[in-house]
Structures are given as structure tokens and as C-alpha cells.
Length: 133
Image (cartoon, rainbow, N blue to C red):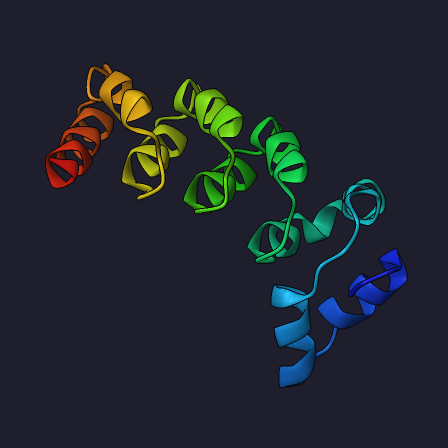
């Protein structure tokens, strides 16, 4: 378990395999995740890619000003429903397309995206819906 911000930063800066595994699989408290984002915004992608990032942190990142961060959240299968709701209404079509592509996106959100004005988004959503039937 990661207990300090500095521990996460040190792991993120290592090249050895054990550090890479820990950065992807070790858990931390919600408070530590939020402190990492507050103190080291450059590590946001590393936080999103961690397999134990709590839903509250993913929800926070679904509202991030950087579309690249929002795309990473949209790709994550652990994304909570509330974050999917936010991302499905994102102004960036790439974010909406990634929501449509995600296998964990709820059906009703896919149905909404199937009506998206952007053809790429609506087609992806319709394709995902067809696979659910």
C-alpha cells in the first residue's frame, strides 16, 4: 500500500519492473490519491492507470480541464456511472467516442450516445449496443 505522496512519486520515477507493478497495482487512501493530484498534477495519467484508483478520484478526473485526462478516464473500466454521465456529455468528441467504446458503459448512456451529432460517436455507440443484444 502506498501511504505517502513521496512514495508514489519515487515509484513513478523508477524504471525497474517491481516499481512499475506497484505503481499500477498498489492501493492508497483516497486522501493520498487527492494529495498526489494536488501536489503532482504531472502524474495524473499514472494515477488514472492505477488499477485501484477509487471512484471518487476518477469522478474528479472526469471533470479535469485536460481532454487527454478525460479520455483516459473514459477508457477505464472502473469508471463510476456518474463519471460516465459527465464524460458522455463532454464537449470533446474523442472523449464521447471513448465512452461509447468502453465495454463497461451502461446501456442507457450508450443509447444516448447512439443519437450523438458526431457520426463517429453515434456509430461506435450503435456498434456497442448491437454487441449487447
